[in-house]
Image (tube, rainbow, N blue to C red; front, side, top):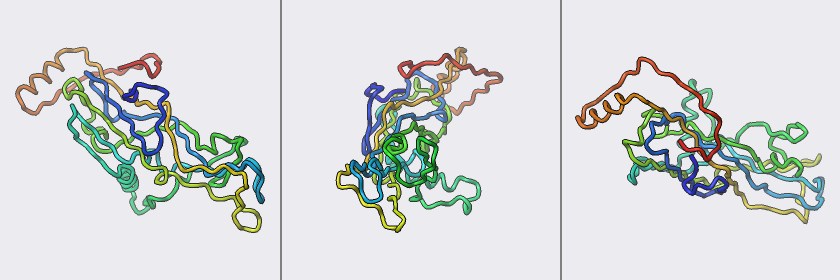
Length: 265
């Protein structure tokens, strides 16, 4: 599922908006919904000239905090133009649920402002933690990586697990991205032996905090039922207005051929 502008190369930056429309006339498994993108940040600075105890190509990077859901500040879901969910502070609420759904609450509680503790490495495999890196390690310096956002909350959490867009009509998902200052943390300033922060070189290039997502798309599982009995039963239940259940005694799953992002459901 591509963004509504249908451009595979679209780039969305911090404070931006991404809109998706779920496939029409399809029986979909909401619990399988996942957003994929390539993520990248701007560093704090790139030293273009040598400074005190700092290499000429030293870079002080910014990294994504917590989990990828932190990128979403607000989410709205509409069915046929009618808003059914509008969640502000989505990232904060998601983090609260994440913290409290780990089994033993007192063991897994963490402060919401804690940075991601994932270890970062240079191209040579040397761990750098939250320290600075060299310009040659571009993927590290720009925190450049593919990401996936899943485990959604609210309507997209998979309750109900399956939804038929032939009945509901058009379902639209709007994701509003958080400001960079809310979701990025700066790597620790590299320090010489004396313990003081190393100086920024006179020719250093400094950047405002920002991040970008590109090559954005969603994936979701579609169910196909060839037996017309199911759809006839659904239509009868809707006409009667009564509660209804349908039992499948047998079912099978298959994996289709590999496809690109331009293949529709």
